[in-house]
Length: 252
Image 1 (cartoon, rainbow, N blue to C red):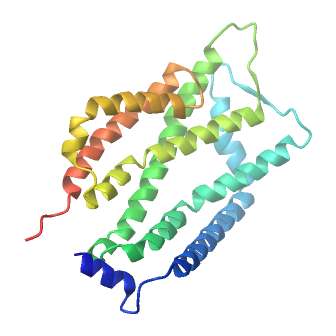
Image 2: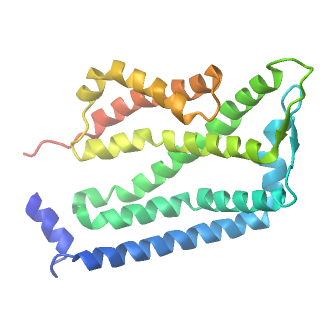
């Protein structure tokens, strides 16, 4: 197997040098950047719809509605540029995953290479699934809790940059967390992770998950932490099943 991997890596023309790897990395980064720019252009075209019908919508559905205010003369300009950039990154996620795996590809066996397209597809699916979960469950629940908490003598006038920082951080965090099954699949394929190991340290994983939920959740309330911690534990259990079916087959 080692000889097969070495032959595939060299392609019959000699092993790639360090400078060759740097050149390959440079082109992958350029292509990834092009994808981000293209995604940012698309977001720029539809920026008003994204702002009014997507990012600002959760604040209008709380009881009472959250009042968003701009405290700087250039605040909205900076905000729009940040949303366009982040939106460009989100739209280019499939391309980012593809460029990452194409950079890793020379170090994989031909039998491993066939999984790249599926890995890119399911990695994107998991990331987008995290965004959907955060947008429809985590963010509305957290905002409703914040809006109803405390005394009515204090009005919730929230700075727009703080609001968007909260929304975007929750979205990106959930997207990354939902990549756990794909990480388990990849590590299991390499023989690094086994379902036996994951079952053995399930209790330890639960403690780590609770700690991660507290660290990754931008708001300190228990509700938001549980909203991230529970899916994390479910994803951990799902990862055990994925690891079980992803174990490399023993050689004949």
